[in-house]
Length: 322
Image (cartoon, rainbow, N blue to C red; front, side):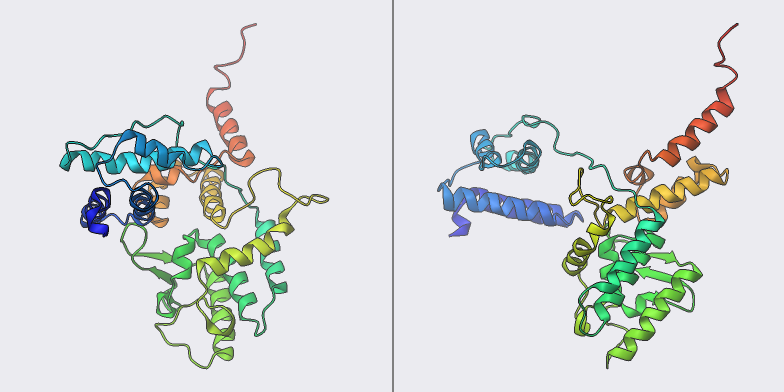
């Protein structure tokens, strides 16, 4: 019985506790439940959490990277702090044994030409009724022009795209907040064109239907979008190359690109970026500006502007004495 396993009961109690505080804990709960299943079904452990048990779980497979082992250990460590508060026999495993578990992957910063290339190539995707081609091309363009999350795009309903007042209504986002995302008139034109063509192909298109759909009107979900993108991505490879010498570009990197482009435009216009970053943070649906900084990357264009401004302010002071 599941209820006879102490760690299983404690994990379910922990998940319920975190959810009561407003946390989603989706990925964490999945990992912890796998850990619970390991303790009761694989090794038959029915007692309290121990350091050895956590280490055994973290290093379960020799193919695990150090980063992944660190993530597994940290997940158990966080739960262990809770378990130790209700179980005097529970042990708290140390962290840092395998190094850092939170690493920032260097994002791929797209150029406008590359986004246009992706949108053009999407027209060659296999699509019996043409809907998939339209959805992928329009979706990539919307990500580029608004910087919204991929999940926010795939969750859009027809009623969430307000053509009259020119905005997207983003519902129940990552931090359980709604927000309005204003749209440029060129973006609106493309969305209207997509919606008009789609209504001509589908018999039914109600306000509660998803705005982006796949072939035969099926929901255009994250899996479908990522699969289509993987088919398109090779068009970004340098001429003569057939594989990446870095981590391949991701759909999520379009959001990084949006943040960098916005900062670059503000710098070029002479705006006070330190003040404006608060606007960008709200626009992107972040709780605080520190979350927005995560999306910024030192591109050549940004570094060039930063150097120019530094020389303008301090160049004379740094001239060598003759």
